[in-house]
Image (tube, rainbow, N blue to C red; front, top):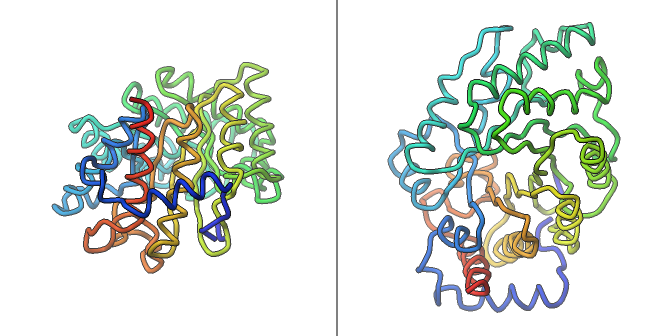
Length: 338
């Protein structure tokens, strides 16, 4: 997941972003991120570890700025079903309870992924048995949170960067159908939740985003349940915010699914970081069906990549220029709706 912020945007977008950055204080103080996003008809969330809910400053920033929680690791397979058939939802329940108590949305992440699997899953040699285990896992997790999770990342990162199916344990032993099977199991377990496919480096046009687009188009044509596509939004010195990001998001939306930014983060600092964030959020705002914007965490202080300061709030809970750039872009979009 490595590639540069500060991408070249179309001239009109670049001028808009520059103008917004020039005077952020004019309306920045009027809203929090969640309020500004809500005024555009969107949800603004963050990835959150359960262990930080008891940290007063962290919880204050979370409650003030964000309207949705995505569990960091608490719903992943090696946490909730470390032993086959024995589920442990203690940490995940804590996050969902917290969100519900504050009227926050919940993004369930993730039901099926090639990473963070317990050994017993990796050691299943039979494709038929692995498919049974996959179905049982999805049913157990999605069923436990039935009607309490707003949207699930059902499958994460099924494609490699070249657009070819990733050679995961599921792909190797079950075949292409494993992704479809996970979505069918999720729908059966919780028909109320929106079901999403999620991946990284799919923000602009390219082999990988084309492959995901093909998957979604095929699912819709055949009636396989899918409601949304998540774009992780990792931007750094090697992976720029693509100039065609809005156009790419729009082509997915035109298929009839919602599109979400699911782990947005931009390494760096200052105006360069602020401009990149503004361009990415503007791309979402340009697409009516881009309904959720989630950043990778609440504050740099606890982020896994903290040294590269990729989030909107710094380690001392100060709001960065990037924070104000996002806030101003959201406020500008909200003003345009009035």
